[in-house]
Length: 64
Image 1 (cartoon, helix red, strand yellow):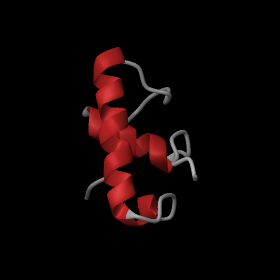
Image 2: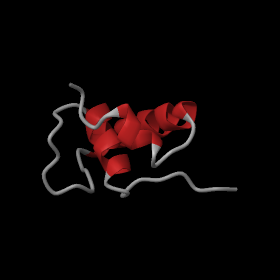
Image 3: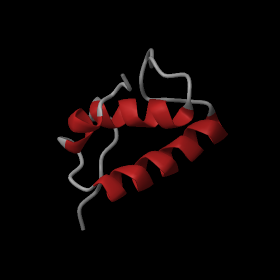
Image 4: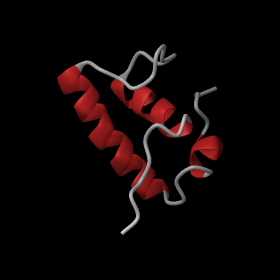
């Protein structure tokens, strides 16, 4: 099973398209800097780490 699950992520971000965009942008930042806001992420990929950050509410969408 993929972790974090899409259901738990959809509780944090309503739109799956917004979620994908947010995770992709953050994954690029993680790849460039090599840093995550999580102490010990479970995932080994940048996208996985970005999704873990969303689930942990360390990364969110700013409403306009």
